[in-house]
Amino acid sequence: MKYSYKGMNIEIYESYDELSNKAAQIIAAQVILKPKSVLGLATGSTPERMYKYLVEMHSNLKLDFENITTFNLDEYLGITENNVQSYAYYMNQHLFNHININRDNINIPKGIVNDINGFCHQYDEKIASLGKIDLQVLGIGTNGHIGFNEPDVFFEAGTHLVKLDEGTIVANSRFFSSIDEVPKEAISIGIRNIMQSKKVILLASGKNKEEAVWEMIFGQVTPNLPASILQVHNDVTILLDKESGSKVKIELDKL
Ligand code: F6R
Image 1 (cartoon, rainbow, N blue to C red):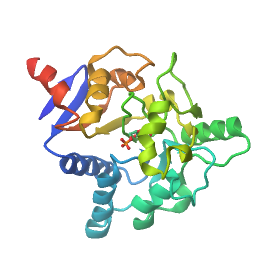
Image 2 (image 1 turned 135 degrees about the horizontal axis):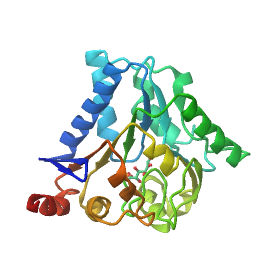
Image 3 (image 1 turned 135 degrees about the vertical axis):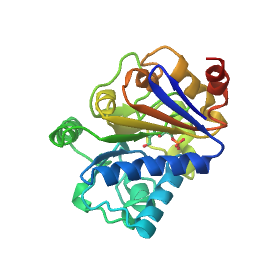
C-alpha cells in the first residue's frame, strides 16, 4: 500500500524482503540516472537484505558503482575498521567487497581518531565539497534515532561525537558477545547533513519499530524523537513492512 501524508511517501509492504527489494530498486535507479551520485548509507540489521539485492544487481545486471561516492552515517568510537563490530567492516562485508566502487570514494567516520572535532569538521566539509547527498538511506532506532542522533533537547547540526543512549547500547548488544563490549560513544553525521540530502529513504522492519515509526509520522516534530524532523523534508519515502507499519496503517486508512 502507498500513502502520502504531509508530503511524505509511505509505502507498506507485506514483508521485509519486499521492502528491501524496493529500497534496492530506488538506489539502483539513482545510480543509473546519475552515475556520479553521492549516496548516504546506513548499517544495522535493516538494510542488510537491501545490500544483498544491490550486490545481486551488480553481478547479474552490471549495476555500475564505479563513479559513486558514499558517506556512511556513523561509526562506533574506539574500534578499528578491521574490528568485526565496526561499521566499516559491516560495509565491506555487505556491500563494498562485492561491487566495483572505487575505494577512494568511500567515506566512513573513523572509529579511532585523535582530534574528534577536527575530524567531524572535515567530514562535513567533504560532504559539502561534493554538493549535497543525492540519496540518503536511513534506518530508525526504537527511540526514534536516525544515524546516531539520539533523543535530545536540540537537533545536532553537523557531524559530532555522540554518547549512545542506554537503550541503543542494549539494542545493539545483540551484535556483541556481551553488553560491556558495546562502545558507549560514536561519531554520527548530524540532522543538518541528513536534512540537506536531496532525497531520503527510511527503512523500518519489525514490530519493535512500530511505535517509533508512528511518532515519526504523526507525532510532534521534536529533537526528542529525531526522526520526526523528516516530516519537514521535501522528498522522503518511508518503506515499512506490515509489522513496523501496522499502527500507522490504521491511522492512514482513516484519512
Ligand atoms: C546505523 C544507524 C542506526 C540504525 C538504527 C536501526 O548506521 O545509523 O540509526 O539505522 O539503529 O538499526 P537496526 O536496523 O539494526 O534496527
